[in-house]
Image (cartoon, rainbow, N blue to C red; front, side, top):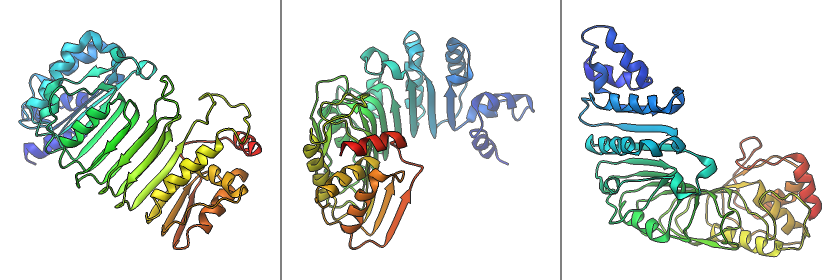
Length: 372
């Protein structure tokens, strides 16, 4: 096989093992230096300094003219002492015309602290080679324009983002098709006017440490085809202004009730704040009445159960395929009936009981049902 094919095959094994192949023969001695994809994981090292040294030594002899993928997975709590090396890695990625860059850092306990996030260097915001970017626990603050002219996929997590930064990213990514933002806070509006973006995933809004009680996230994306709102949104509701092109919608999230602590399981007055929650969900469903494929999670179904008990109907839906992502307990049955009676065009109905992104214990469900 040609050397290029062998190097491609080597990119599917850990870098450490790929380097070991240099002992096989003279032909293989430098073959690993042409790896088109590099993936470094600190979990394989007992000493973080050894990990940094290995990455640095691996990059120096690299002969690949253009990298397909460059990825680093490590604990950021150890990185501040080695920040010059991290900057070296990003310069290397830019210099090699990397198409996919993944900086997957971890320090979940301290992610709300600015010092515990790696600040992306400005050079990364004006790179025409990037086609896919994935940043976790990174500070995303472009000081100038964003120029990601080839970027089609972007995932950002454990991050603070302002309205201005969101708009810069969208304006500077004209062919962006997929956007995922998870475990985030700081912005209130997403206005997506260009036609390229087809899929948006919003997962987990972190507002527990802020005073943003009752805040609202507005989304306007007239060309969007798929929308997923997942996980715990804290006390932040979502308002869909224009999603007229949506075909697929997933509502598998949970809100913290007014007056409730995020970890508080005590009984509440069933009338306390539930009217606003019902109005929020009803408004959300009214924005999605035209969607053909809908997925609804446990929390939304339970709110529909409350509405059913009060004689309130879900908006009339035009969905042809309905998927419920929920365990089957007493508290969800009225909500399921409410949805089915409000979906006259339904052709396919599916219930998934094990994959729900928000897990509920049977005891907790029974207790919540008693509140109603």
